[in-house]
Length: 273
Image 1 (cartoon, rainbow, N blue to C red):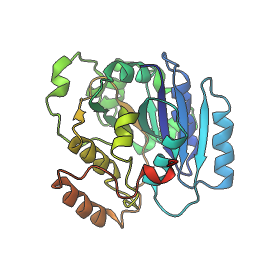
Image 2 (image 1 turned 45 degrees about the vertical axis):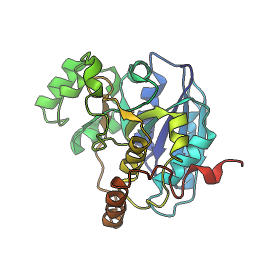
Image 3 (image 1 turned 180 degrees about the horizontal axis):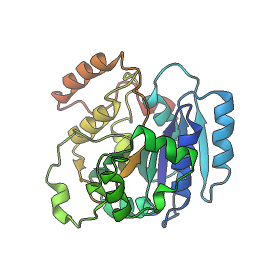
Image 4 (image 1 turned 120 degrees about the horizontal axis):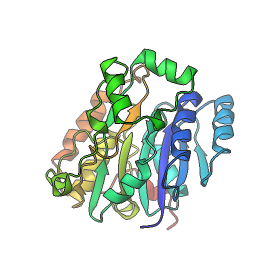
């Protein structure tokens, strides 16, 4: 596998996106491109974002859509259309990765599988400190994170242990829970096969679970990424969750429709026929 596209979702938080992108710029494996998927940031924030993108040592594309509420599914689909990688890694713009993030994901990639990583939550006060002082979290090691957890600056340090789990990573091939697009990888062909994200999922909640469930229905198996590719998630207030119940009911219905694979309103609308 040669080409990787990292799809980074953002919305009106340039300070967080800067930290996210700077960590990607410092990867030990630099053979990838970045697609920034902007779900409606203001003109001023777009300008700040693009100034950081201009510093990138690897190719960057910027895809922006008008602000019509939380439409992460839509902007991610649009970003994938603009990408060139045969392997996709979805990452949120409020997450910071370590320097081996890409290389570890590349090693985990195997045909017929998607790979969800996990996340470590940063406290509100430490998030403010990281942003205000431009703390390079990507440089920290496992011992540093253990100390940060003792200080309650992060919620846990165990994910930073690197364990060679081997076949244990394949023990739950049909588990869809806790697979989130803040840290999720899959083959482009598999993403196309299920027609990407379903844009019927508007507002916060479960668009990532729906994608994973359809991948599983299509025969794509889960390969666990924990103890290999954690991300650090900056604190922020909760998103508006008015559509959460509606999205969850749609998700439950699809969970039991084993033949439901192709998103109703997905990637195909942007592809030439």
